[in-house]
Image (cartoon, rainbow, N blue to C red; front, side, top):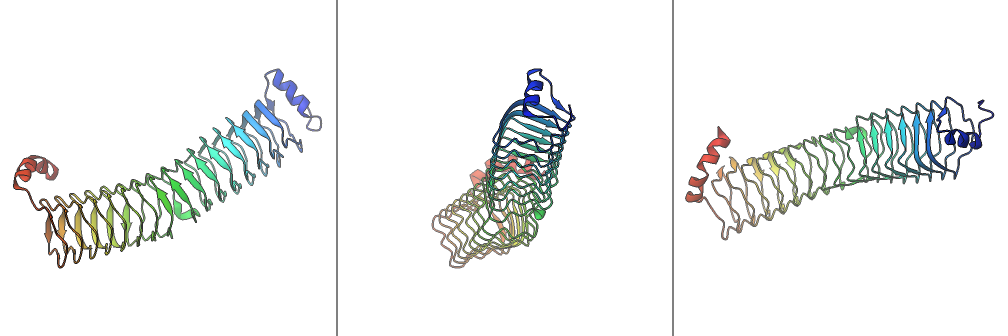
Length: 359
């Protein structure tokens, strides 16, 4: 069948026979607004395809050339693109549901205000692709090249981007909620005001990052690294910071109520005027940490250790300092009503467990 002769009637005939559209050049075949269902395109050249406003269901593209194709305003459901060329394709306002892109080239593609849900990008080239103002819901991007990727003002809702180097991604105004960003690299970035609520950020590196005013409430930051970072007035309420590492950090005014800093290590950290009611610092190692004027009511520092820890004018009412070992702790003018110290009977009961921890 020649490229000049191909038409939708011909494609419908192939579909009735259960055959794929194979090895043809569809040229300027117009598909705007068309409904396409249960069809396989294999090794098809359709550069600049006009699929604006089209509805595609269960359509699979394999080894196809779809560069500069227009999918804007289209609806795609249960479609797949395998080893396809989709560079500079346009997806603005598209609704993409349960679709997969594997080993595809989506470089310089545009997804402005698109909604992508329950979909996957695997080993895909996303260089210079723009998802500005897009919604990515429960969508996965793994082993992708993301250099120059734009996520400005995008929303990541339970999306998965593990191990991504965000230093080469534009995250201006990004809102991420319950997203999996495990092992992300954020070193040196300006993340002021960024929203990363309830995100999995285990092992993330924030060395030299500016997180002033950022919202990381309920985030999992286990083993995260904060070195020479700024978190002034950031929100970490109910965040998990187990085994996290902090050094030379300015976190004045930090809100960390109910946050878990268990076994964290903090060196030369300013937490002046922090709000940490109910925060937990059990087994934390604190050196040169300033809690001046901080609110730490009902906070727990059980088995914490370190030196040069300042609590001047801090509120420590109902706090627990069971077996706390601070050298040069400054409690000048601190409020210590009903502060609980070491319980000898409890310490005796914990002796075996503590011995195992230090063995």
